[in-house]
Image (cartoon, rainbow, N blue to C red; front, side, top):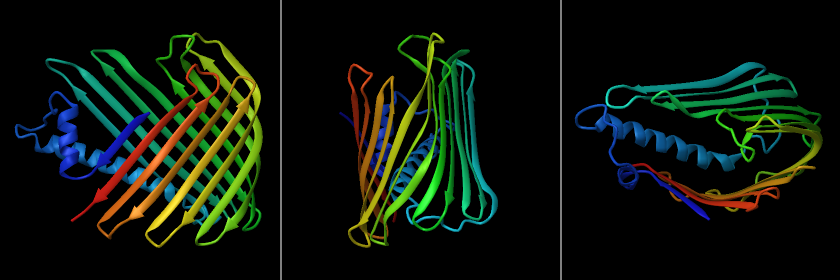
Length: 277
């Protein structure tokens, strides 16, 4: 089991110093480098804590019609005794037309070391929902993940799926929300040698939220994708605590199951904490 712990503040700086041979300094004092890395950890923790909130758990949030979104872009390059560069970009676009809401998200990651590529990852997700009423809705979900460095038969170069189906909100209160959806679609897998498999698949998802108190709530997200090649199950369970206005934390346990692998399950325990003063 892998254990990942992020704690903001002084201990985060200690963790960064211990995990790297030397901090990449942008000034002689290294202050800018430390601040940048603390900001990166803070953003990662904020995303982790926000995961359990599930803004859409109570149905269509009456988003503003039209196009909205956000985008981010990052680049760094180093020359001299060593040469390397990293590029990353991400974005989320949302288009609303009354009860019909479409969202497109993407992430690009590229890195090279001395002219040799070390990362070429592309992830894209298209999610469309049509809300018939507060209880029933229909969805279209498309996902593609690509690894440009996959070269072996055991490597996954492209993993894609598109599915469509209905969804229903079984419980929809301020204290508890539970929705499920299921559909059929097409799964596409290509290995590093260029061999591919295209087949029909079935997808089912569950989103559960329960508020114990005004400061404690739990969430559990489950996704199942079944095709002839494999059954893949992701289950993300987490509990968020707002101890005080200054202290928030989330404890989560993520299980990724794939019955086509020799070791079928990967498990990750995560502890994220934010403290401000």
